Picture 1 (cartoon, rainbow, N blue to C red):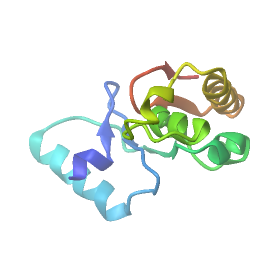
Picture 2: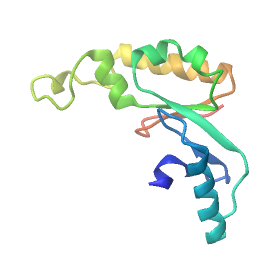
Picture 3: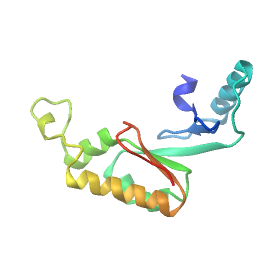
Picture 4: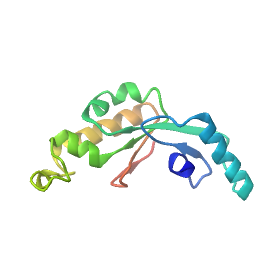
Length: 131
């Protein structure tokens, strides 16, 4: 569970993505685990939030000032933007991650992240943009 909250990037940076910032105890627990296994890492922890709703995307300029990066939940962002339940057989056919409205929101989030030196990555690995 701990490693689902906090990731060790290839450069040794600890990253804590999520809708909520993990408690300091979770960060410390991961550090202890890495120390015990002899895995090197940076002492800095980047904190980020999920951008999963159109509302969060629209105010991403404000949110970018508060965090180190965004993780874009493209599946949820698409579902909420297009008002279609991707698991509903009657509506799932309207689910389109390449819809112009979805792409425009993703572009907005990426631009706002770059303006503030924050990073933006897709939670679904659909796209990855780092400043």
